[in-house]
Length: 159
Ligand code: FES
Image 1 (spheres, rainbow, N blue to C red):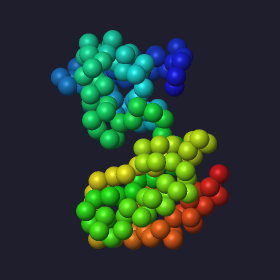
Image 2 (tube, rainbow, N blue to C red; image 1 turned 180 degrees about the horizontal axis):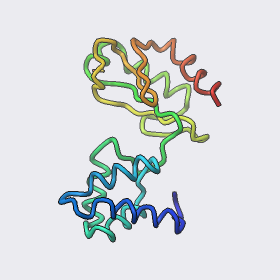
Image 3 (tube, rainbow, N blue to C red; image 1 turned 45 degrees about the vertical axis):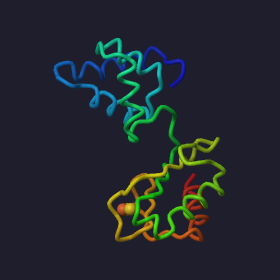
Image 4 (cartoon, protein in one colour; image 1 turned 180 degrees about the vertical axis):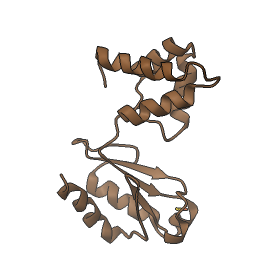
């Protein structure tokens, strides 16, 4: 979204307009932008600031506080490895390390081809099937490092 074109600017203004009558519109505006574009870079935050009168500092604070929001583009497939307590004690660190090794990215990064983002998550509410990995909403149960190559291959093969 860098170098925003006129249509994108217009759409962000339109999203801001949706919540003009709300007392605290920021979360709703940012959620819509995140859903629409997948990330919320600084130049977009500046437009939101201009449209809402909320300072860029405050917007930036919200975007960086909530892990749901992202400052940078996410990959097509977002791999969320749970590192919550239940998953951690069942070896989740080895699982995320394997993803990291095979994809050659650290948690929080995206592969150069834009296909995968690797995220470390807190408990995703699936402790009974720890260690759990969520990929674009699909939850993989009891994942072991040895399963990681086939999981990655499955998504690569879908391309
Ligand atoms: S700790 Fe991983 S799902 Fe709860």
